[in-house]
Image 1 (cartoon, rainbow, N blue to C red):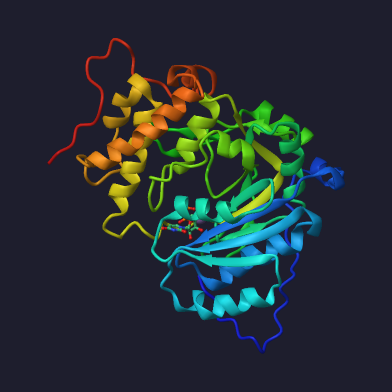
Image 2 (spheres, rainbow, N blue to C red):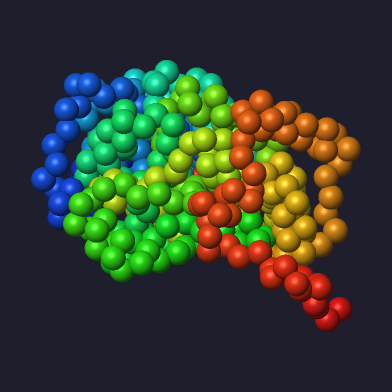
Length: 363
Ligand code: UDP
Ligand code: MN
């Protein structure tokens, strides 16, 4: 994913982009003088330099200056050489708004985001992956929505960037995020009439789960519901954990058809690393243990994504879950049963009269 950037060449960095918003969004104007500003936080681990720069430049170019407090790049101890000195030099030239901080040791995407958030100064935060291109007027609808409903967490509408050609494109359908019993995010196509209404009005619509590569929230609200679980490591599951927690503890998740960002959908690059599967799995166990209540047995019996079915938390890890459970109790969050009924009716529990549920495999 890297393009060799030679500093002597004139590269037109400010580029035009296909405006993928529904027509109705293009006529909207915003009273931005009343809006809070945002800090954009971008964790990165061994990303292509050119993609990181595409992310940063698109934010600089397509965000009104008064609304953008800063861009905080959090390098998660990458080993790629061009993310060392070359990135540092480049960032220096971009002026004060762009900052680069580094973790001494790899912490994973969740802790890197939290690290960036600790240093952020704006009341609104936006987390973006490091291979994103934001589209025209992407931030304004987010800030308008947060002003109206500070207890919502926002997912801009995620377009695609092709991993081979790097071309930006939009799906011509609208979707929400769903959930499987092994706690993975799945795309759910909206019913025709809801799609039509959303295309016509450009209005936000709710989603049971967040996809994770781009999300925005009011920082004070996010902290009040426990931000992220800092004991989730490396990669995976944090989007589902945050989704369940937000809904069950009184907030909501919305997607904005008028705020578009393109994300490079690539195969997960860490998949081949040894601890990858078990850390992801542990992140999901943490989520199931805190949020699924008696339904957690369905999570444990639906483990087809994992190589090792017998991963367990260590004693310290079990202990660290207590904090999350008492947070849930303190916030008086609703049950998973409520979530299934009111938010995610597409996720069906096995029939009540079934005697066994799970997978059968041949050894
Ligand atoms: N990331 C990180 N540390 C890690 C793994 C990921 O900082 O240990 C960053 C990564 O560079 C990216 C973001 O976290 O900007 C999300 O990761 P990725 O894009 O691989 O997730 P996906 O989009 O595949 O869900
Ligand atoms: Mn990504």
